[in-house]
Image (tube, rainbow, N blue to C red):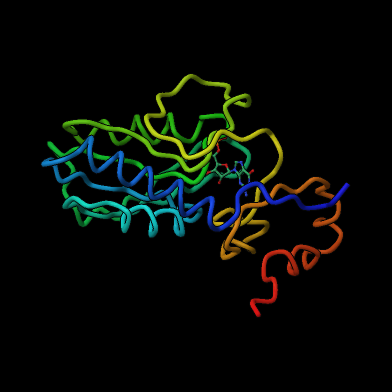
Length: 188
Ligand code: 5GP
C-alpha cells in the first residue's frame, strides 16, 4: 500500500470551500460575523473561506497553548475586535476528539456573544470523545493522520496544496522528507 494517499485534491478543496462560503454567507446575510481562525492549522482554509464569502465580516485569530503533561489548555485571543454582542464563527482545521473545541467555546462564551458557531474543514467524527456542536464542516474523514492544506507534521507541510492521509507514520518518523515529493510535485 502507498505510504501517502490523497484524500482531497486542491480542486476538491476549492470546490467544497466555495460551497461553505456560499452557505455561510446566506445564513449570515446582514449580520457581519467575526470570523476567528484557530492558529496555526486554519491558515490556508481561513484565507480561502473568507474570500469565498460575499458578506461584510471581521477577521481575528486565536492561538492555543498546551501546558505539557497537565492537559490544560490556555488561549491567547488576538482580538483587536471586541466580541460582545457579535455573531462569532470559529474556523478550525479539524475537529478530532472535540476537546479543543469544547474549551474554546467555553472561553468565547464568556465574552457575551450574540451567537457562536464553528466551521471545521474536517470532521473526524468517529474519534469524538465529547459532544460538541459543529455547525459547518467541509468533509467527514476517517481516523488516519492527515497532512497538508494547513495540517502539519512537526511544523512542516502546512503549505501542501492538497490533503493527504499518512498510511504509515513510521515512514515520516524515520524520514521527515519522505512526503516532500507528494507535497511539492513538479508543476510543469
Ligand atoms: P481535538 O481537541 O479535537 O482532539 O484536536 C484538534 C487538533 O488536533 C486540531 O486542531 C489539530 O491541530 C490536531 N489534529 C487532529 N487530528 C489531526 C490530524 O489528522 N493531522 C494533524 N496534522 N493534526 C491533527
